[in-house]
Image (cartoon, rainbow, N blue to C red; front, top):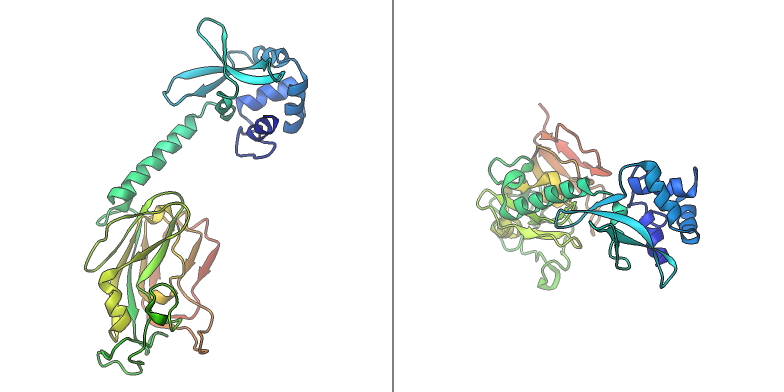
Length: 331
């Protein structure tokens, strides 16, 4: 129980009770000026709780206020547990008595939680919008998205030169009858590292639904579970990327970018156009190019690319950006 108090007070985890919170003011006053949080908790266990009740009176007005789930305010005070001879939290009832039930009121250490509720509601609305593909997730007119064109099987301008079958579409330099997946097992391992891809790995900043769209279809939203990125496949372009020569200028949309943390390695989509609209403030990486060689020592490249645009508001959390071996068209 001592460890639980210390954790909630911030001696083990500073995510609770900020320095200017009421609980810190009360505890600091009771322990003495300049006391550390760990000292405050230790002294609390060795001191009669009345010391801290006096601190309440010195601060004026009332004890710590915590907002319960049913939106009713509860007045929380430290009391004494006869069983363990240490303070627990109780609720001050209308009659002036204390209702004590072990650690039932530990949540009071978080303060009044007004901001927590506002943030919870905002996150919840974003979650529902992502599920229903409305708001900033809307497929037509959403606030934050990427509009792009991708290509594949064009050895003249990209490092992708393999196709299954023989449908070259008169594109020279293609290697035909090349199996895409080793042993035919999808998403296990490709035969050729730089072969174009028909999926992306989407990881939002928090639990949400994700979705994409192409020239032919907008797809249903898929749920991100907070653990593994969502591997989102665009089935209408899958066959073309695997087996059609000179498969270029395919429209590709990524929605809900204001809540997106990562899109994984995008280099094998071979973007010919890339326009980011709205906000991308939570994005931590943007890997559009590649700076290595494949299994046969071939260099990656994506040439003759149209101008790209990025959000005007910037990407303040971006830690990694790769534009290696991307060559834009010259005016």
